[in-house]
Length: 278
Image (tube, rainbow, N blue to C red; front, side, top):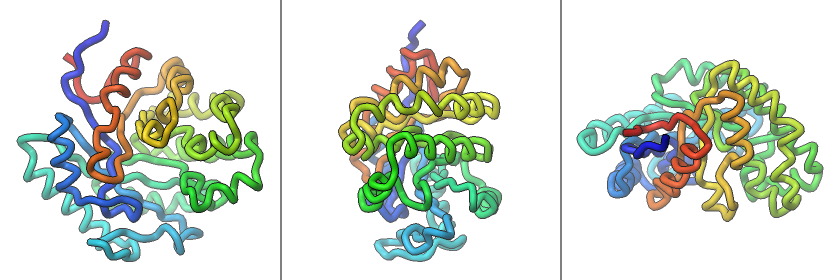
């Protein structure tokens, strides 16, 4: 039976601490309140790959890019906690992070996770072969040297280890390779997962690692979210929980983007919904 959704969440928000985002924590929070959200979670980017330190190991502090370190990250967590207290009567605000996963620096990821008391951590595969497949500045060089099957096989191989790592509350934007890949490889990319995804889904169910519905794919012109409707249905049949729904907002006006639509889709598939049902 369909219930009335009593509280929407947006658990994937990048404030200006992420180098590719703009807007401060309070601006995002006020936007979420204006849109009637019940819970939000800030998930600033944390990219710790030592082989990408020229590009990724930075945090934005008031418009100045600084090297990522414990002191700088603590400024982020302290601001989120302060805003959470300020607006506690209007909205629940959680403090989290989106970690870029790589098997060769799991020890660094573990040190980070153990060093902070975060409410929620998203684990995402952004890079293959240390090249970002979610960046328009890098991805086409990767595409030119990799066929579609190789791309998708490499992605799900990396994702398998991301799940096996076992320290993430949700896997972020699963099937994000279609972000730029659809235009490059064509519509066959939308079914390319079928050959490789089952071991990943089985492991997610076994380890209790949750799935995220990420609405930003629609903002990028795709017809479906991350992951696709077909993958969501496969995940549901595999017994995977829906851990979060998020907009992947990188500026305040993107908060809550198509969140009600994502809830409706999840409910139609049969997932237990994050937030609240009355």
